[in-house]
Length: 402
Image (cartoon, rainbow, N blue to C red):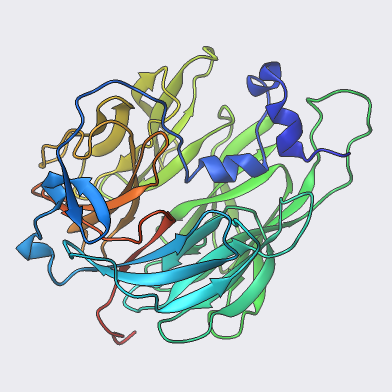
């Protein structure tokens, strides 16, 4: 039996301090597992079939017109359903489309701005090595999903820019390392960042990298922010998607960076990373995308900080899994709206008024919810119970002019 690069790395603790995790890093960039902790449980109320903290049960009048696209996957299922949920609604909306994929696939999604179109990645290619077994789909209400391209990095989320351009991480597996017993030796793959035509599925490579990982961290100033990991190094580069020109903005950072977001007000990238010298510590850094200057925002023993730049300034993160989300430096004051667990921001509305997040806690399915960015008011995002939920983003009530 041959192990993938991800599996080999997970087998040894010593490797974690020296090299990066390729395939599993993409999963960690968007999914955080919460550890058990002791804290007072929030009061629980019922929204349709969904049990949520009572603070979310009452619909928020200011949220009434907002809609969020979510994808629901039941454990072991070979399909995922699309739902459009009203903030503060009483129950999940009906299934508007059904995506077929491998059993128990990992699904990630992103809304195309000003539309009801959802772009989703899901595992479709049966393989012992899942590194590039996903496909990208275009999903619309009341229509059959359309496969756009395959060879997409497992558990990666498509990047959709504000003007509707679509990018994915893809790759081709390189040769397996010799079976010499060195678990630290990882396979080096041929990786690309590809632009995908939303209508035809035609792809165009805008960046190539030979290594372990090429992760789409965001878009800023017309360029793509790409986090790359290769043998002995990790960096962050800016890529012009039209010319392919590449600028290294952070030439050397510790591997295992994840949970990237763009701080538009500061022209910066916010992310969680590994401490430079302390293997037991994790950090939140802000990287100035103009100068490359890094500022340390937080240091913690927790690997589930899930940082995200807050609209209008500030930072959302989970400093302690026993207490949940904390906002710092923002106008809104909020701490642990759903109690113990990890709260990871998934999407921001186009007008930056609302934030959608996922609350995860041990032995429980994730609970999506929304926060008003300025006031800190919280609203439920009703979702099917007993399912894994992927938040695609805020969607238009109807198609808007492009």
